[in-house]
Image (cartoon, rainbow, N blue to C red; front, side, top):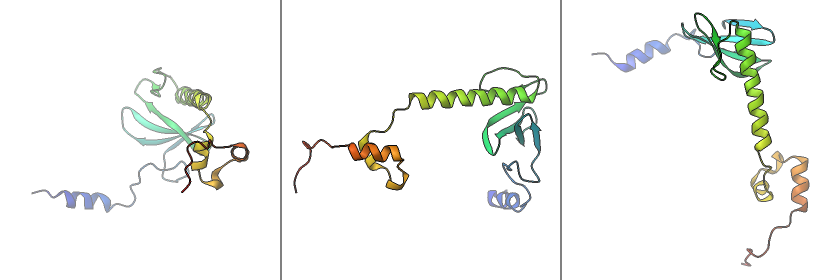
Amino acid sequence: MISTFSLQATQLDDPTEKILLPPTDPNAEVMEIFGYKLVYVNGACPRKYRVYTDDSMIGVIFQHITHWSNRMDSLRYAEPVGAAVGLDQFMKVASILTTATEQPPTEEELLDKQFDSLTNDEWERLKRYVPETRDLVAA
């Protein structure tokens, strides 16, 4: 009979095996290309790499036998830099679209935030805010 506990215990006994090594780890397999750091995660075909700009991870790209891809734009790239740039551009456009469609929080929502997390603009909005008094009840 095979016990799952003994299998898990033997897998956890090896402290040298790390998951998701950062690009600064000396054991990480890092490929630096044109402003990006690719850190090997796992896989054989496709090989998976996390993509970093500076110290921020922007996503994952894949190395197939004949090409590279990033799953965002469904294109095939001859070089890893093409897949990384395509991923980076997609993430930048996605963040611009997200911030453009976001509405600023209402004054009621600002009142629910912690005071030390409010910005100067949010404080100024709250100073000018006068709640509707029709719903207030004296106790």
